Length: 277
Image (cartoon, rainbow, N blue to C red; front, side):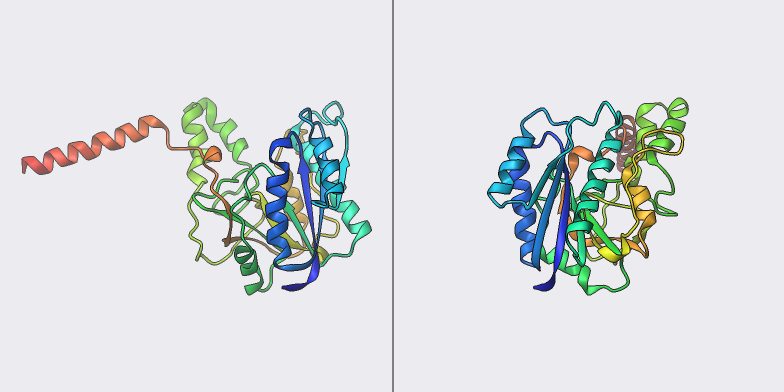
């Protein structure tokens, strides 16, 4: 066990049905590794009773703090604005209330149910990291949050919008997003990135002072809120291939069907030609 405190910050919206299962699993995993675990949930814009479940979760000591920011959609029309607001609120609260050595961030839409203490523990086998974020069982899915000078140099959906009028929806989506959703073996060394998330991350608190999430670009368009935060972190952020949190097929973008059909036909033609010989 690591003799220190970790604070988990979680944004929540319309997650009544899986609130308990997700947070109970993450809490159980963290408590096997860290001496003190504090969980802060920040809700907004729910219509399914998430607020009542969250408040009750504090009474049941499943989580330590629950805040509802009410309906933010009128003030912040873009989803990423609202998520950034919730994350920033949680971070401000944690920094004012606690002095944790580590911060953790998680989504509770089911993406962390395969997270293990063994996976998280691998972060501490490495040195020189400010943040470590999760890998997935199948293909790495979170390309929107990803920035890497070779793998994904800019906003994947900006690429999609530029490719769309040239290639059409299927091809543009595949080239901008799907082709970058690669499988990362668990034994791969940590991958340094400018930004990434993947639904779960652990950061050294001292490296995050001054970092903020922002869901809008300078032009006022929607962007992934993680990019600005990660770029403001002091030091390096890594994808930790051994810290696996989920399989995420609902997030995958597959090769367009015409390509698949063409590939099958080419293989069939090759077999026919070999048989003729």
